[in-house]
Length: 97
Image 1: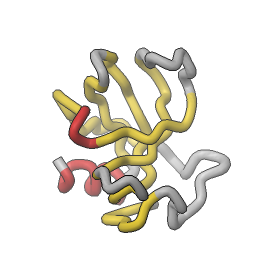
Image 2: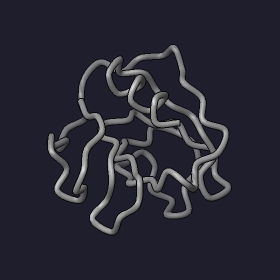
Image 3: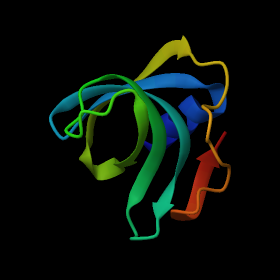
Image 4: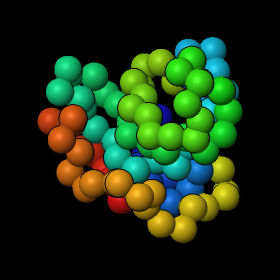
C-alpha cells in the first residue's frame, strides 16, 4: 500500500478507497508517521462520503483503516491551497509533494 500511495503522490494521481465504511476520492499530499505513531496520509478529499460531512476538504487518514485502495490514472495539477511541505503532525515523512 505504501508504494501505491507514494507513487500517487510523486505523480499527482488521485486515489480512491474505502475508509470507515465511506468511499472516498482524494488528492494525496503527504504520507508518513503521525505524532501519535500511526502510519497516515494527509490528503484533500474531492468526492465521496465522510462521517464529518465535510467534503471537499483536508483529511488525515490512518492507513490501517483504508481498504480497496486504487490508483487512478486521473491526475491533479498542483498542491491544494494551505498545503505545507513538512507536515507538522508527522514525525516521519515517507513521501510528499
